[in-house]
Image (tube, rainbow, N blue to C red; front, side, top):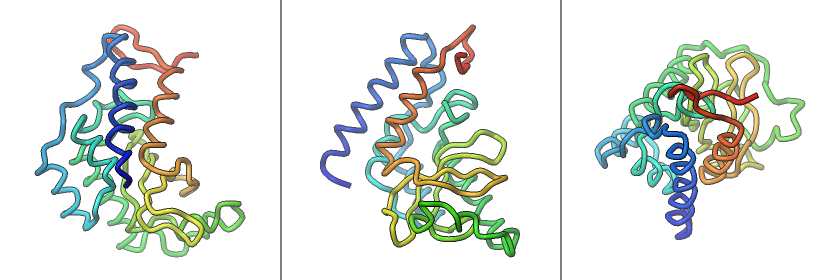
Length: 189
């Protein structure tokens, strides 16, 4: 990532933290990950995380369950666990024979074909098999680090954001449509 990433991640997180603080809901954001936690993600999954994600994890090691617009921002342990579940399903042939998910999608060339790819790293989860993923092995028209959406019923789609900074910006915008009632995070409307 560029030298601009630290400032951008810090700026976005400052706005996110302010949103939670104004609603007396900072308890949803977990403390920082340790260097060892982050190294475990890279070692266990065999990847190098983008600088922006690493900086984000150093600020908050995810969120509590149901404390994030997408359900839960995954901690280092959650990233390993969720990604491993998908990789295990891929390895055991669960997705063999599943129709090409994006054959008719305008962005079909941005993603590798298939239901899951070993180069996808889970970022958040809704508890029902859906969530955003970091794409470290994009298709020919994609970009390393783009963010995709994974829906367990319809498969992957996207990209939904160009990178992790874009992902954080999008989640901040979603927060504007949410509130906290009696200490519980809820979508307004």
